[in-house]
Image 1 (cartoon, rainbow, N blue to C red):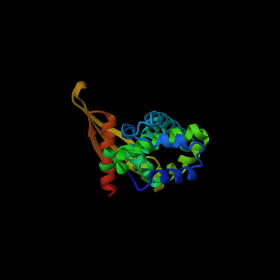
Image 2: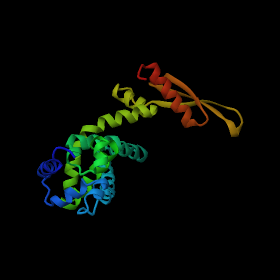
Image 3: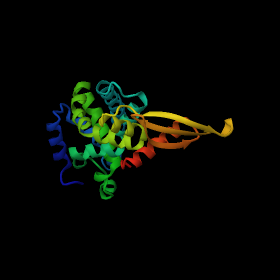
Image 4: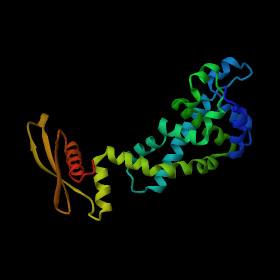
Amino acid sequence: MSANPEEALQKLAQRLNFNDLGLLRHALTHRSYLNENPGFTQDNERLEFLGDAILDFLVGDWLYQHYPEMREGDMTRTRSALVRNERLARFARSLRLGEALLLGRGEENNGGRRRTGLLCDAFEALIGALYLDQGIESVRRFILPFLEENIDEVLYQIERQDPKSYLQNWSQKQGHGTPDYVIIAATGPDHDKVFTAEVRIGGKVYGRGQGSSKHQAEEAAATQALQNLGLL
């Protein structure tokens, strides 16, 4: 076991103003602990399920309220990036959740307190427990700093994965407006067409690309433009 997971749990309860210490303990009980402690009958998996649903809702609501121009597909990708396992595990580490986990000896010896998947699950279970203990608004206040601290990094990563969004963001920040995409050629039979697109900013061609659809050609043009600009 950790030096004193119960002490770590008590400190966490004080930081989060938990009313029901048993509920918090439930959220931090891994299923491996039940096998060696028959007095415990519930692990944190049901709370994990609840917390996952609450996180999806609150993060989605936050994005909707704070990014009114963001399209549905971009909101979906951004929400997924904010609640992905690695990021939730990072949140858990910042709270030192690993120190408060109740683990079986095998999980303890295998480094469970540091494992990404286990920490992610514990963070989701904590969200579920906080909701039951204090309500949705307390959870909203709790996760807000995590969202504010991570949104810029997430948006940057998404932009790098989406060349058109990345190029548009760069162009607008430079005061050049929104890039224009023009299909300048479409060759081949209907079942196997190849499209060629140019991306123009302020009337100047910045990149050209080809693809089996107009969207793919535009993405290829945006990628070449980013390369020409030294942004990729």
